[in-house]
Length: 631
Image (tube, rainbow, N blue to C red; front, side, top):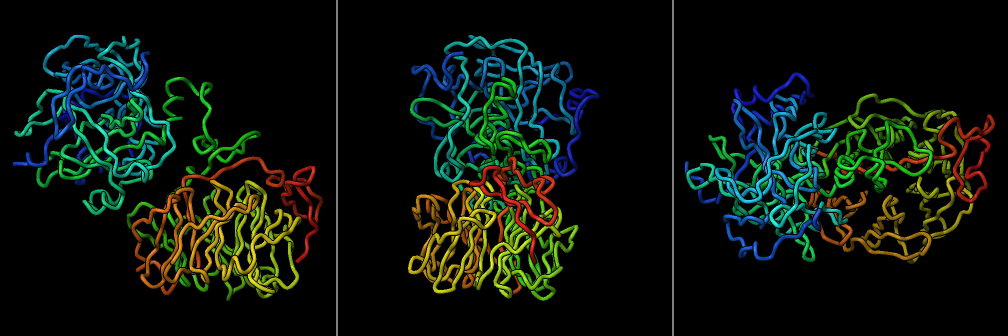
């Protein structure tokens, strides 16, 4: 539902946060309307247990958009705002706790500021906007809690809010909470599944019917959503949203519900749908975009119960600035931009969004060789074999500077240990592996030498391991501690033929490698030695990278970046046109996960003596070694 400007003005108090200009533009000017409809496509003419409901309140299967019975969707809530001294229905919501309703953050914003809670009421137990029903409850709101990043984000990301109520909801057969999705599957596993939305829809005359309706939507993959209307969706589909379509759109702020083993869960919160041409009404033939609740379960529970009651996985525990926790682990990735690939050619670096969208040139460079990123500082590093330098820049290409050049003979590949603040690189000319402090490049040493013929290198900062390839006396992948001790051969010929790119999976600890000889990508658990084939029969692969969800590689024949998920499902290729001048020589993935924890070497060189460098060794009593510097 949308309010007139005069009604919006009556909602405001002086307090509140301002939306960034781009969000304002999204909410007002571009071809998107944050709307509330359950309307057929053809009508476009100009605490009880959560997730349970009374069986005899359930009607037959939904075909288009049908009236819902009282108690059929007992967790549905309506948000009313006082405008011109009269309550007006503005958005849907869902009961998730006896004192909490969840909705979209944009529903609670007017003139780019948060509406005051005194002007908001929540209705539950209602199936008719124009008449009371048995069990109807009208509740005041004590606090509105939008996601803390909603007002800071670009676009409509983090479109989620909690309304804390002044009094408890009285639970009954017609008023109950829905369960918050807490299962671990991702949006790709959700694709093709059908969920239910409810709301007060428009009739065939585009008038609010006033009757609570229900409809089914089917989740589609990102690329189908983008192809449906790339102009509308291309710039506003972040990682934490998904698309669904059917014969209806749904009320902004309302939920999308899925049944699992007899229990109903809220998985999505309706954010927006593209509008119809020339009118300010939602187009029910276009996909609905929903905020994915799965990524917010920790924040939701913390907002309701307080942080002291919540134990969250590390990736849902944001770091406080760049402070490393004394115990445990936190996620520092979201301090910086994320969810894109950096793809380097010989003379430029391109930024490629993971979920579609415009590719951006971030840097001009020459004779690049090797590429990795420091997710704890928001920088990327690369080598230049003509100037014999290693350079770095911010993710957007600014603040480019030389990291190290003294006594350099070249860098053919490099890897960043963002936890212990070290950079490792391969020098094929000198046949060595070298390491330097990211904070002070003069603190460095030759770590491994002796006729190394190495193409690729990778580090696992979480487990304190270093990996590299060699082709002296046959193709090998070797590994050691980060200080070079306990060196071993992990894989050798004939298991590997021509490995030219290796990466560590932060999620599993496996070493993954692209073998251009066997034209496949495999991952090996270095401790159990179990090998998984992730992708095979590849066409002219050259470079690869990965996140916890997807593996990406370049196809030089089709000039695309191809990808596959961890379940073996191929994704839609990304064109390489205009990304590289010839073929990519480096690729790294900046995801939404960057684990940060204590390292004995991260600060003050681990208090090692002068002329030494601190390197992590999990087997050492102090967890580190002080290695004498040599160049």
